Image (cartoon, rainbow over all chains, first blue to last red; front, side, top):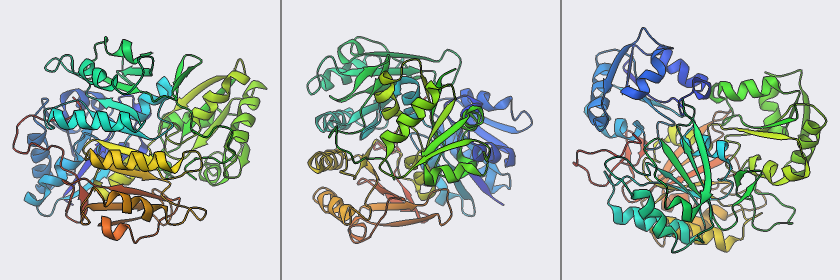
Length: 251
Length: 251
């Protein structure tokens, strides 16, 4: 069978990789991924053939994986967190028409938004927006428009790719925009190296966040006006109509 | 130890529950949850003490779990999907000051947004908003404000709790608002009973979605102007600046 799995391996700890993802890797002859992620699974799957490509070569990596599957090798493209959130699933689908006969299956994973939120407390208990601050593939004016839209509608924000060596100061830039809508004391949180060595969290105000550096291993959370600190954690109450008996649980 | 775990068990299939979540349940003396979710784990953990409460009694359930932990029983409160997205993590933290000495640990899980996206293809490859259509705890005008904000900023939308027996027609209402901003042919998707018996997906236009009924077991995805169908799947290209070599991958 000519199959490519797009596998979300979770934030980094094998403990947070689903059995479904593990099985997909076990079934694969070839594992393709960014070098750092490949190293996260190599210990558990030492005998696989690996296709590792550096950062910013995702299209090459996906083409190699699709070609590998077309040649008859079941191939897994691994993504940290979830395969469908700023991961490789979309690119594989985009390229798939060039590789007829190759079947794609996306295996979801625990993404940084939920894993980071769990470490911080419960910041995402209300409607939220996930926005990447990377303007590599998205014009900054659109990113800024989305930041303004989310903040003005009182959505909690979860920021991926807050900044990088190539993009210093992007988090500060975003915070300065958000400070037009949100109080300086808005409760915010940062989760770094989630599920990996050196995992750390920090809870701080939006004003403090604007003065704090981040990196590509950091996920940033910005609360809304209801978010507060409880027991040193970042918590957004689940409802606006407190006291009201009804609930907004999914079921 | 007086401990409460808020455990995201994933969409429903044991295959999508992380080892971390499974271990938390194994370590627990008591498992508390909505009856339907308790039944999802009972087969694997038959010997636990169960606290099951009906829908809309989340506060009671969390209080019972916190009291159980205070009495010395390690207790897991289970949530479908992730514990921190419309789950019980926030409520446990909100109530925790009334139960001194009880430690809370949130265990993240695969949420319906990522699991549903994986089934549909790759709809969430760009910035997106997660919004619940339940107005049980949130005024409808705020939900409407968020729908307008997300659509006007070209964010992809993932809708939880689209409607229920008590809230018929809410999805149609939301679609009619979104049709003010998005073309009728906007690619949308529905994922139902994700990871459970009767799992199904549907890809349709926003105009068709406005005429389609949903329920509390359905997660709805609404694309942006770049979202399209590829190989019968719902795919949002990862970048706006196609052809540009740089990538927006998380690393």
